[in-house]
Length: 251
Image 1 (tube, rainbow, N blue to C red):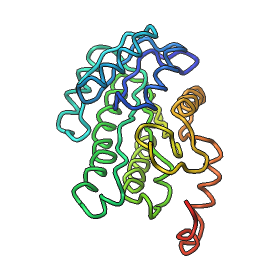
Image 2: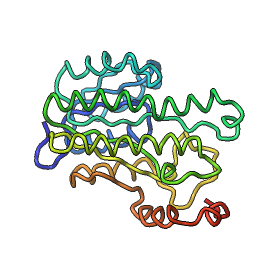
Image 3: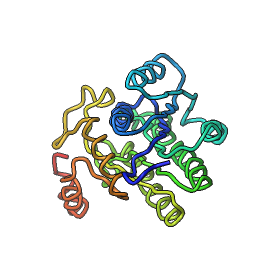
Image 4: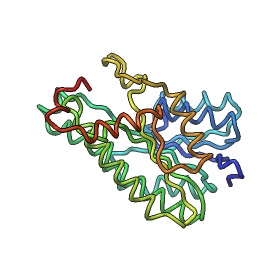
């Protein structure tokens, strides 16, 4: 159960090798989280992630999870919740894809959409139902500012994040008053393995900065968190820019 700080004692990470998710887990463990489940594809990366958190004093377990296998989500997450209550579910899986290649190979584009959106819809609904059944908890969904407006450079990824963001907002409205809190996190460019080698965008941030913002959002019971916060104003301007002008902007 969470206390007055609104920080969780127990955490389930969907996307257990995500650098942002692990930075968030480390920050929460340093505060009060004691039990962590890392859900992801089995392998050395998942086990190494779990061991890195165990060294911080947390009880960490892993469970096999595949975003592209929605038929298994209810069974996998049911197993976790059957072991005890979960205070926070962090939905952190996703892939960036490669816009240039994906435009020429529709199947690759579909995989981006299935991972980032379809898989998240399935896992998000299953997790939300489990949290509602226990009567408390938070679902934090890692979205992206890329979903705010389609850009030529990443519209396949951006469209999948736009769908995810809209879904998460609607889910939050559906769960309002049930004791379950949904928070959407919209980072800008985050320096991770996934973005290594890409041109760095203005206002780039780090997994640790996102983790800090997640903690603050949980304490405030926020519904939407921007990282960095100034992106809220920047994207408000870009969202309303005329399309002809937007096409010429270096964004």
